[in-house]
Image (spheres, rainbow, N blue to C red):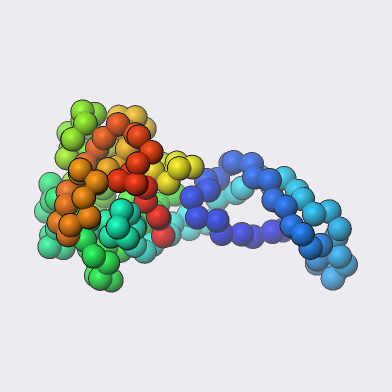
Amino acid sequence: TVTLTIPGLKADRVVHVRSPRPFSSSTGENLWSTEAWYTLNRLADGAHTGEVRGLGNKCLDVDNSQTADGTKIQVWGCNGTGAQKWTVTADDALKVLGKCLDVSNGGSADGTKVQLWTCNGSGAQTWQAQADGSLRNPQSAKCLDVAGGATADGTKVQLWTCNGTDAQKWALP
């Protein structure tokens, strides 16, 4: 059994692993195959918690740590508060302060508000990490985006057509 934690990889995907050194077996014997294919399995908890960092190394943040449905999501200097401790769940939700990152009214237009909302398991609360570092909402086929590519504290986060810019790149916990 090989157990690796590789952020951003999803269960049921196949990865190709290369190593310049031999692997050791459970008996201590060196195994000289330097590459292998593995099918990833979901670990029991399936969740990771921490900061979600984006453009300008700013953190995804809940405005004033409010917990009301509809609260603005923004970028802010990373400060370790609960408003920035996001949990990436096994079902691709992003949770903070007991609520979820949500696309307002399940919208799909560029500029649609992204907000804090009571978790309900809807497609408006599903965020899939992409190979380019973006977070894509599959229901809308759009990405989580820092408005105008700005880095000022308090800049809103919105839904926008996926375009591969730094305004849409996020580092998950």
